[in-house]
Picture: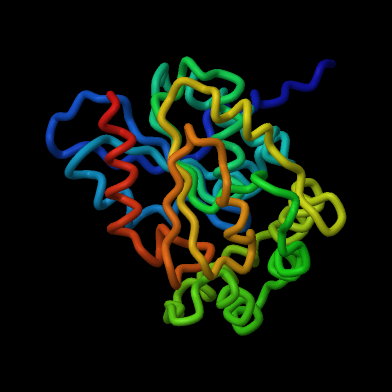
Length: 265
């Protein structure tokens, strides 16, 4: 007798923030970084609600997508995002991606440029080989709030006051069976020893949509110099005294830049 198995999910878990103004433009889709989840964009989505509909996904292996059928590097996550956009009937979107989510967004744009109206990349992965792999591996392995708090401080600028709930929420999420093992497996795939795999930045710059890259001068995960001397087609915005989390450190400025990109359609 053939065993009946449930069909794999077609759409990544997501949080949708409706538009409050009736704007019919292409929606804004937000992709979080390694070890995060869609909740990290709640503040951005709230601010965007007065402007445009937005959708924040959990990437494979994160949040409620912990048990997604295939988990791994940015290329695997990009395929899941493409599948989800298609299943939701979203033929044209503005993509915003942070860190690993930035690499995912860039790959979606490279593979299906016709679906991407603009790209806003926050300290994106894949723009150079340098990466703080030791920090990410320690972060992936940690499970208690005290250790996570010490590690998370390295993701922000030196003067940023880390909200207590961030470490507590991260510790709570890692109580789920397989959560820590999954993060450890993902970090091994997005790094290549002490370095990270890189994107074809020149090909990205040649794409037809407007692209903004946002970085902080105090980024201790991916060095700011990866934002230096990018092809001229890519608009680069570097914020002083900001770390690896610009959407949490300077959210108003990030929202402003997302809206500038989304004004294209």
